[in-house]
Amino acid sequence: MSEFKELYKSDMARYQNKPCRWEKKFHYFLRKAQTAKNRLLKLYYKFRLKMITNSHGIEWSSNVKVGKGLYLCHSYNITINVNAEIGENCNIHKNVTIGQENRGERKGSPKIGNSVWIGIGATVVGNVVIGDDVLIAPGAFVNCNVPSHSVVIGNPCFIKQSENATKDYVCHKY
Image (cartoon, rainbow, N blue to C red; front, side):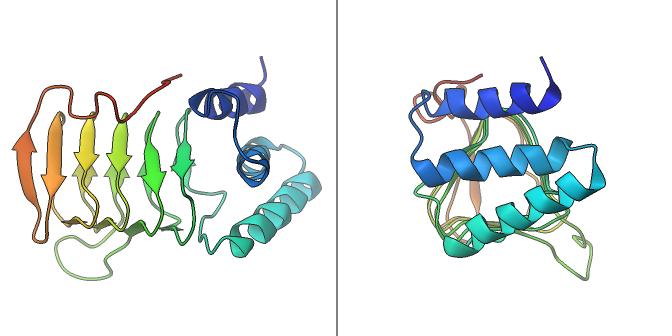
């Protein structure tokens, strides 16, 4: 199976193969732009992705490193820094910001692990590492490293260890 087909299939599986029309297009052009070998085709796919994301207020570059099984839920007004890294089977909800800090000890962009659920209005900024199986509650502000198997709430963030933190939140993993 080609790299594109594997990535696209994994994304669609997270929606139980019932995404809405625009989500289908978003994932299609994102994965095509990420995997195209031909420069002109790559440029075309990036342009189409930009058109789709602009219509939903999403700032997302095809250069963002993102693993298999991406799931966007109520996906409007999402901002993802171009240097961010997102693992496999991650859920990202509306009004989420994954951003870069430009100064200080946390200068850089987040690295997000596998099976991470990021709730509505959450913000993750700076050169921080979010472990695997982490639930970031709606409205949380995260600017520190988060160990695997944790729930993060509040501003400033409070981290609580929890085995199976994303159980029943990150579903239909690929």
